[in-house]
Length: 261
Image 1 (cartoon, one colour):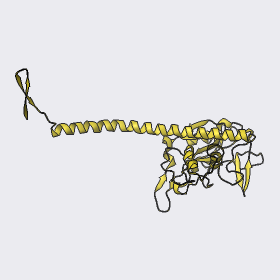
Image 2 (cartoon, one colour):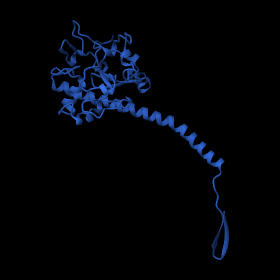
Image 3 (cartoon, rainbow, N blue to C red):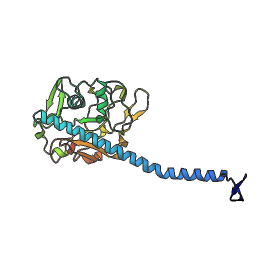
Image 4 (cartoon, rainbow, N blue to C red):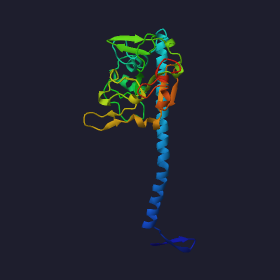
């Protein structure tokens, strides 16, 4: 299409140019190539952000656990509360985050510290229900030497003091291990609030009867996991690096309070 444009007595002819189909296809192809190059980088950045968020969550939980020990004569935060049997997460939530009630909507919102962003399960919009991503290390049972973190048996709570740990900066207390599907994941529910070994830690979580898996921990953070130690530090490690002389089913080293095993 031609148009006349006048300028100081002169007339110019201007032709409007349109993209051809081939040119449009070339542009689309270039955009697709650029997207293909950028998406892996963006995905890697997303996973890194999830890993950092998880580390931050556990550091916060570690601070809360240290507050508990400071407030309660150096006792390690127990696997369950002495009064009602609610798990460690509910105990820390009600003591230091939201002291109203775990059934309070505000309490559920503030409980996000117990949820890792790599956990695809979502918090149900119901007070008290939350997809908790972390569990308490229950590897050590009681023994004659009293070497354990905390245990619960026949409604009786057993708690130890911090000095039972010979190497608190290398003794796991909380690690990544999700609860059951979010619809049943009550924050004050004791079910699945503990984990005893890497093999159990990496079990997939079924979505319910006849439904697909909703969480595959084997892929969490590309093969490495965050571990909160009794001393409050968080270590990012491969599960096998935590077992010492033990196995993934019966680990030693960081899973026990003993030193150099």
